[in-house]
Length: 397
Length: 104
Image (cartoon, rainbow over all chains, first blue to last red; front, side, top):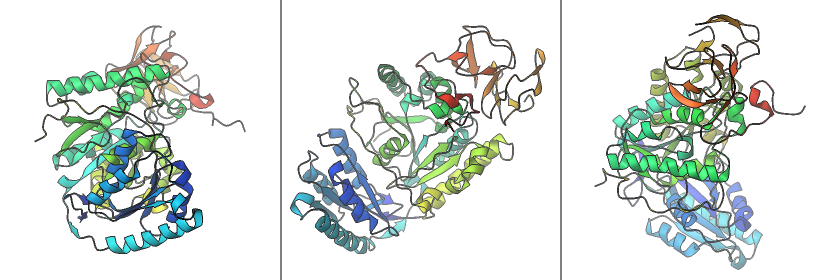
């Protein structure tokens, strides 16, 4: 396994040029720039809003200095509130090539698209020279998410992902699980796994915050398809989702953009702090994936029962299909058939080992199904967070 | 395991279908044989034994909701007869697991 060595010492498993629009008004121009590089690793991300937001600014900085990213082109309309100078300075300080194009000062759509394409072509040449060095499992950060869950997710796919997490944590990797709104009902059993009682209380508090937040919104983190797939309540979905975390002790509680300080298992608190503002915490699965990437995730394990097809910008997504019927229907989109467990063909341990081995292969350069198909979904919306409290990372040096 | 149904935990009062189970299928529960009154899609639940209204539903040995009516052994256990102890469940026409959720 080899990684691209970045100036901060972190290593990436991909070497991507990111083109980031800083308001929806610049989205089309940015996507036209990317469209010229269909067969190269050039990816579109962005933030649609015109109002300032500290969370979005921090997320964008973290994403654009992610170890999988080699260079960044920002595309600004010119009058939006996003602080493009701060963002570009952060990327520049990380040692990466960076450029900002302002459409209003670059001659409009056609001229900006051309200037962007020229810059990206040069950046691709430049980052081809970034050194690739040996990389070990204990340098990896891996996220897990489930989406399109059904009643098989908690029996096959999620336990297998949990087994893979146990293997990876034992090898020194940092593993992140998330969506506190889908841990409602699991707070006591989860708190008992914390490495300190104070962290246990912080875990409990994070789930109670999620419960309050969703109660105000009037909907749980539960889609109609979950019910069609046999899940009847949020707590039933939660119990199935919770087993993705495996059996390792919980080393810390982080928020989006906080990078795990060392190996171990971490819960990401994705529910905003304070009064309910800006709507639902994560409006769809990719919002959760993006937050784990902002916390340094090199790749994400995505467990699905109903059959999600998404990938992600920046970090590859390994799709684990929990439902054997869905696997047969969508095999081109699925990396792992955990439906074998439902049908009695393979054990949870066997599928867990397959997932762990696939993580190492993908980190070594093998493409996931969604990567190969060209999936590069991305979404970033408004949120607000307070920094994590002192009890959240007891093991940090 | 009871035919196509899994018992996930000894304390559970529901069984989970590990494959699509047809209407009329005879299965043997602790209370004796019953026939499925409707098809049970994969991953949906049936009552392991009689459940009274207000009783906690246990799956994985953990509470997943509360019965809103009396449920007979072998009956489908889902959003029509249990509710969350936390937030209400949002569902569409396809929640029975059989309809496709499209009008034509």
